[in-house]
Length: 356
Image 1: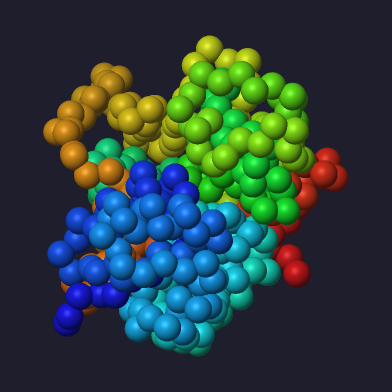
Image 2 (image 1 turned 180 degrees about the vertical axis):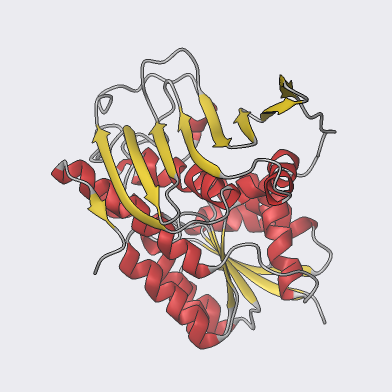
């Protein structure tokens, strides 16, 4: 098969920092065009990357280029629109998370992928670290026994991205840290738990730092801040998920909170062992010969970012050398969970997902 011809939609920081290096480093890929509504940004990145053609309209790019795949790095609200249009044109789709801003749009994306027969994959980069890949194998070996509960979160002390810009504008982002950070860690926890189906959620959401521009995190540089702009999303969300096998998961996500330090974590508790992955450090808690033991696996340095590895996995799937690790149906479940947590936060009641 000849080199895959790829077009990019959206040339913001997530593209330049995480996506571009992955595409440009793969020998079977040719990035032929960039698209951004702000043409000077696309032109600047095109010059830097050696890409010859630039567009401001993704429809024009798809009509004029013979694309095998596109990569969507636009604001969240446009993910489904661009993905569906591409799939209907017979173009494979890789998309930055979240899948969509509501379950209806996520389902439309999944349906379009099934109808077209083309591959739709959404970024799940946290599955592609040495620690999580090892932990997945450890779980699948049965070493943890029955995983019956856990907790996961990603909390920042002060790390609001693009304050006043699209990140903090619900009409463009779909929400705050729950949809921005939660999609990562909830997916990771559920994947490690064996992909049980969610049946009920409850949650709460708070906006307490909309007037604060204080930052202690490089994550604040994502997006473009706009002084006096919109901030109508939460800056902290908590919740609780029940699954069809009886397992449960506690969740918490914040862009800003009065905590000691930022933390990205997943903890799972099984009948034979437990695990704790905090800021990349993995521990296993188990019993050996009647003695309680903590095990700390050691991993060599991996120079490849998880984002790169996820995109390279997508490429390998297109080349017929690998099978997808995540599927559109799982993305629909993810967006249903997030949407239901927002609904529970609004009403103060549990939301069932196993009923029409």
